[in-house]
Length: 130
Image 1: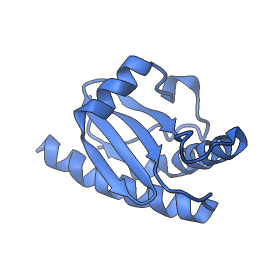
Image 2: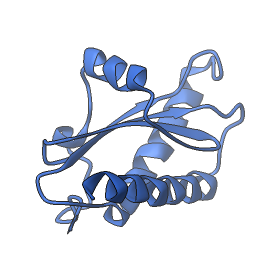
Image 3: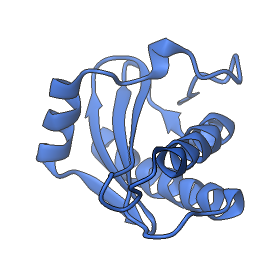
């Protein structure tokens, strides 16, 4: 097992999932880990490393500043906690995190949720690698 991108604490463009077609495909697969207020759609594949897309619906937060704040909190929590996710060699994970809560979260709430999501995702990865 290897840790995920622990060499740097940055969140480079190579770790971002930007293709709208790929995001749609991941969401339609319905592989989900859910811990309120974040729903994590994921796909485990042969590519190495992890990629992340963050989605905050306009319906829940009509103001762009609120959406951007939630996205910023989620990316920061991912960046600081991605070392919790250990992947087998020659394995990669693509994730789409969707915020489903109705109120602005605090950083502590988002961080606790991300830690729980990584714990659940780790157990799913271990089951699939067996």
